[in-house]
Amino acid sequence: MTVLHLADEREAADLAAFLSRLLHYDRGAAVRLQGAGTALAVFGRPPSFEVLAIRAVRLAKPYEDGLDVTLDVTVSAGELLETVAESAATAAVPSAVTGPPWAGVLPPRGGWRAEEGLPAPDALRATVGVAVGEFRRRTEELAPEGRTRAALDRIGREIWSRTVGETGLPVRAVHAAQSLGFLRSAQDAADLALLSSGAWLRLRTPYGSIAVRRAGAGLGMPALSVR
Image (spheres, rainbow, N blue to C red):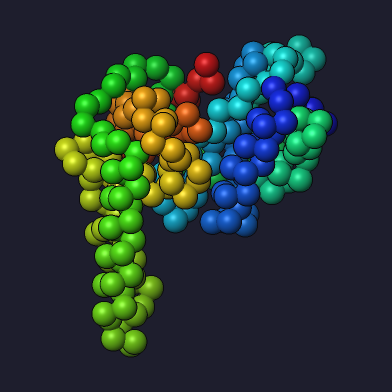
């Protein structure tokens, strides 16, 4: 079994926390791992948000397994979490699993450019708070017999598909960033950015990224590099 040597204990703890949050939303979650050099990218898709979450992990030494100098495999998030040893700063790569459809459609390798108009972290968190409050209020106003899954999904789609200002970024992407621990202190405002490349928008934070395809975009984009 291939062992990954992470940069330090904190890196291992952050990876474990990310995997735990993914499993909170989907106990059968899978993640795609792409490693090259001293960088590892971990991709996941929490179904509640319909976005792609990306956690970059620093390795203590370049990834190398025999003659292979890169890693690209889809594995069980739960099995990977079980192998993370925070004190030793290591993780073992489990056996590959059949990847879900999203794992074959990752953001592009390059061509990212900065987009204007992204609010500060506090304003983004406030936007999520307002949306959560509206969802609760509107669902509570439904008659008991009308509180069906279809009705709740319809309200949720309407609220979470709204965009943040004029950016085109859906509110659900910001909600995902906050729920997965990517959106934290206002001190990180300088490192918060909204990027675009082709059909994709990407909310980048110091702790990870949330990528989402623009409405109506087709498939077939090349994979995102881990540089």
